[in-house]
Amino acid sequence: MQNQADARMMENLYWWGIPTLFRCPNEINFENCDIGLIGVPHSSGNGTTEKDQHLGPRAVRNVSALLRRVHLEMGFDPWETARIADLGDVPLPEANDNEASVQRITDYYKLIDKAGVRPVSIGGDHSITGGIVQALGCGNLTNGEKVSFLHIDAHTDVFTKVPHFLGAKKSAAHWGAYLVDQGQVDATTSIQVGIRGNTRTLDWLEPSYEYGYDVVTMKEYRKIGLEATIARIKKQLDGRPVYITFDLDSLDPTVAPGVSNLEPGEQGFLIDEAMALLHSVRGMNIIGGDVVCLMPTRDSSNMITARTASAIMFEMIAMMSEKYLKT
Image (cartoon, rainbow, N blue to C red):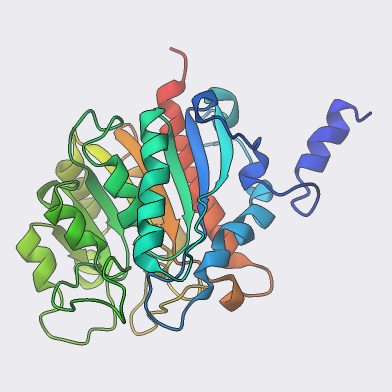
């Protein structure tokens, strides 16, 4: 039998034991947790040959135990504050059928929402956000209100002028539009930050503006700075049920090389910038969040992108855990 010191040491060995997200207990009963960590191993929504994003949840499970720690800046231990569990992966038996898989994701998260569990998910390509928020918008966690997005990304994913993405209608390029059309998201109280994608048309930002999203492109961010951007996020999302969706391609390729859609033509966010942007919604009603577009087969040998995805998940978990602190 291990003593307490030995057990604590073993928990720090990320390569040891059965991998769960942040070495949390694996739980099958949603009622037994406040925050649920969920893998969404889906990659047929990207519509390209970049198909290995379904390996993202497994990669993060393999390394996230190393990121299990107290939050020094916030001054508490999330794991002791809230009931946090690894709820496993969304089952996706029609994995190559994007539309069927998105519906499976929605059906799964409806159960999560009904149980009052705040989900933090690891994908998977960015089409998973559509499946998740189809379930959460106007649901239990939002008290019947529409979701407002903090969307950190290199791309808008509001590509209405492309009817489908190589066959995928509810694709990684469309969720920002159809969730508004369906009434689950309020674009006018949402914000997209860091947009810098490899543009193919001169009007590629127009759909976001037409829907009412506040858009902070990377060029504008560099011009106005971090503090002004944070103030803009706070003003846009104040008093709203917030869902955070973080695409790893918003980060600079030197920070996160293992993503599906690298954007090397303009510097992306450095990790300190990304963390500060996330913290802009600290104290708000964060109903859930996801980290998407991790491609482990493109990652460096030290798995830096998977570790970075873990670190971003940890920040979401910590901010969501604060509401459970005993006063």
